[in-house]
Amino acid sequence: SATLTVHTLPTIQSGISYEACWGDSVQITGVAGGDTGTKYFFDWSPVAGLSDPNAAKPWASPDVSTIYTLVASSEYDCVSEPYSVLVEIRPTPIADAGKDTLLCRGDTVSLVAGVDVKGGWPNGTIFYQWTPVTGLIGNPFADSLQTSPDQSQVYTLNVSLGPCSSSDVVRVDVFDAIKVSIVADTHRICSGD
Image (cartoon, rainbow, N blue to C red; front, side, top):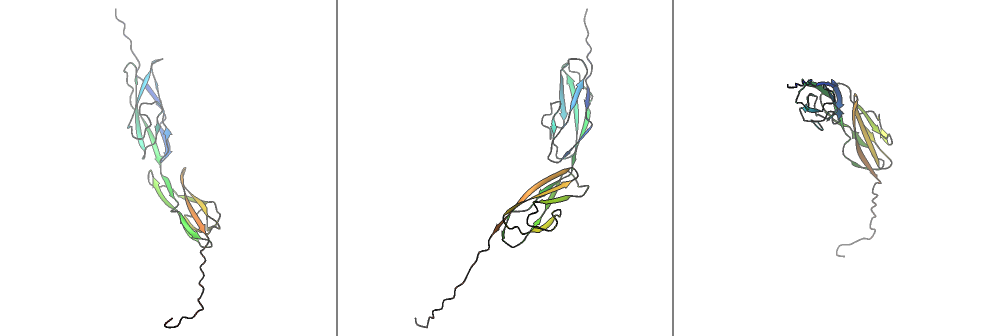
């Protein structure tokens, strides 16, 4: 007489959707169930942006919103139905505080925020903040302002759009003005000397 063992198809439990800012990672999870004590294998696709496409809980960091599909198989070659998970990438502002600059003490220079939004079209207001406020002339929450610090200063520009943010720094080196004096020669030179 023969013994016939019937194994259960794996079922998958996972989160349905996840959100991440562009450039960040989010851990997506897949849990397989079926036969008690069975070893399961995982296959996520597409593999782009995944830390390990064969892990139960890989880290995902796609450049754009991506639907990942998980298929689990058991050690008995039973294969689950595909299960889809959305990783939504939120638009993220990438700060650019500008190039470092030199300044004579007492002069002013403009600080202008540059922003490049990655991960999609911005659907909200971008907020700006310059710190520290030392030497700033104008609103530190504006995208551009002037500064006239008494000494060299590193300014940090923070930009945010919803829950996503980034920062950049710019250095303003302050120097004393060079003092030049011209002394007139009082000696006379005559023609032929």
